[in-house]
Image (cartoon, rainbow, N blue to C red; front, side):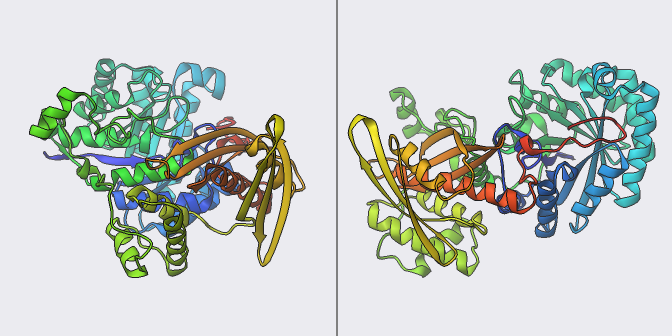
Amino acid sequence: MNRKIVFFDTTLRDGEQSPGVSLNVQEKVAIAKQLEKLNVDYIEAGFPIASKGDFEGVKAIAEAIKNVGVCGLARANEKDIDCCYEAIKAAPKRRIHTFIATSPIHMQHKLKMTEAEVLEQVTKAVSHAKSLVEDVEFSAEDAFRSELPFLIEVFKRAIAAGATTLNIPDTVGYATPEEFGRFIKAIHDAVGDQAILSVHCHNDLGLAVANSLQAIQNGATQIECTINGIGERAGNASLEEIAMALETRKSVFKVTHDLQIKEIYKSSRLVSDLSGMTVQPNKAIVGKNAFLHESGIHQDGVLKERETYEIMKPEDIGIHGNNIFLGKHSGRHAFRDYIEKWGYHLPEEQFQNAFQEFKHLCDTKKDILDDDIMEIVIGQLTGGQTKFNFNKLQLVTGDQLTSMATVTISRGEAVEERAGIGHGPVDAIITAINSFLDYNPKLVDYQIQSITKGRDAQGLVHVKVSNEGKIYSGRGLSINILESSAKAYIDAINKIERYQEIGGESNGDDNHRENISCACQESSC
């Protein structure tokens, strides 16, 4: 147990590059603070040069996080690296992560650079990053499809220039566990302990976690991963799966880590709610079925002895029993005590808003459950300043599926009411809300998720809204699904408004990112 595994979380960088995911600054900071509670070693906060929105998000995280490392991504050129440093410089523990591709297919078709030119660029980029920060990570993009002798030479150049961590990505998820293990061992044998060896595995063949664990067995001591495994295409290695594999099979892996695993479930829920990427029910560790038993044989076994069919306790990752005693007669003190036991400490204004929302829910819902409270708190953590605020919804449904919706919103001190007609209630709601605007966004995705059970369950609605080719996500929560729909659509509209206020710069969605020229001639990450 003499090797410590470093958890490098890239949920807010690679994870946010998932198609359709768009987080505003407040949401990014809320996730970063939860990752700090989870005690990951590093938070890769974003790709600062991609847009003003990305830069501001990374900068806000660097200013908010005090106890874990904050990292920014930069291509292998001075402009990217300088921008990255400006974004992360407020962080007490900061890292610049710079990269360039090393596989023949990338060098020939994307970079249009020779091996000699790539080696020169590695030296220049890492040396420049090292002049700004002590902690420099270098990644060889598409490392697994690179020629091993050339890759080792690249890594030796990076070490000589000052890199303290070497990242070996399986960028396209091509590796299988056995061959990836041999690949990592060959690199470890070549460079020894001159730098930390890291891996970044994608899940295109469903092997990202298996490949990451094989890497640990063969000398890697940093794992790059995301909450719920979100990321480009089929996603990344899942932090919670790797963490619980190391925790549950300690005798096999013989390594340690510093994660606070009781924060895993809260982290998963927060990322799922804010990203709009619902966790599949049978997802390992955090799926809603992960600790449920329906088979009579399994139920009988678990009732007699939990370990007959369970290798982990749900309490270990922060899943608690659902039944609580908060209700319509509960006061502020009881409500504050309850949410603080979950680890949430809200500023006074947010606490008062959450308490009022809780009391409103008590008037409409018989049984208040843990998940109800968690969703209320998440909403307050990520609220931020909004231009449009939902007040009230009225609906009338007529013949031939024609509906009329009247939506009341507030803008500052002003309260306005507009009506819209549509083919069904959701279409009518969108028409009414769009009448407040001088543009015409389109609903492109709509998902309903039941947060709790029963006829009075709260419904969480996620929407994706398109405006001028850009995608914005929104979420809304209510016991009334149509009210949830209105809230979710307004949430997305507020993100569009925020995007326009900051001069058309991105709030984080990769679909917004500009193409920026650089010395490497790459157009995007």
